[in-house]
Length: 326
Image (cartoon, rainbow, N blue to C red; front, side):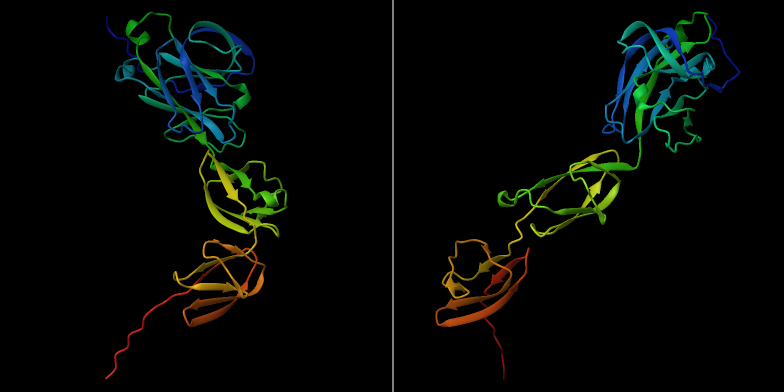
């Protein structure tokens, strides 16, 4: 049988007014969009079949949905003979197989003569997506509440054509993400300081509710913790596009600590009191303290001005100096 060749190409996209319509289709499968899977998911379908596209519950970082339709080389002989339709607000959750449905037709277009075509569907009002040489942004916005949506290929003629009807297309669905991510703060406290107040700043802005996730632009950010009850904290963290960062901050007791280091046979005194070498970091009050080291008949004393929230390492260094002279 001679193949039908269509020399004309129609690129018109028709936006259909609101209102549900009934249709019958063969659902070949489901694809679920997730901001964590940026590469998307793919499925094969043929003429007169459809795919259900679902969103994960959390779509806060989503600007739109990208539909990339890849056609085989043989499609160039049949251009203009298949239409692509997208439905939203489906009457029920479709299962794979032949099914009768109702939905709102949001777009209807005749496939172009390209072997690879990309459509983008906005899912928020301020999406910023623009039609370009590689992708066509469909008019209108399909809010997350209107999902799942259904992508369908259908013939434009009733004349049977086995090659056209069995021709494999590949649909790849990807999330289009905003430049935002989020940080979720988790604070841990010393048992004796549970419930004490502190102030949290991100990029020098005070965070009024530390239990809420905070939406931030992707990139590096600065966190500060200020308190009279804990040691002050300063750290930098990175936020990735479309991801939630769980950031744990261990709040520390602000009592100053002294750490002593000296040779084995050294006796160490703090404010005239002999200290144990195995006592570990020694908590002290802010102010002036005296440290004294005894090694045999040798003694050395130093005064230390201790500030709140600091740790001090006090080490006795023993060295040998060798000088040569003529």
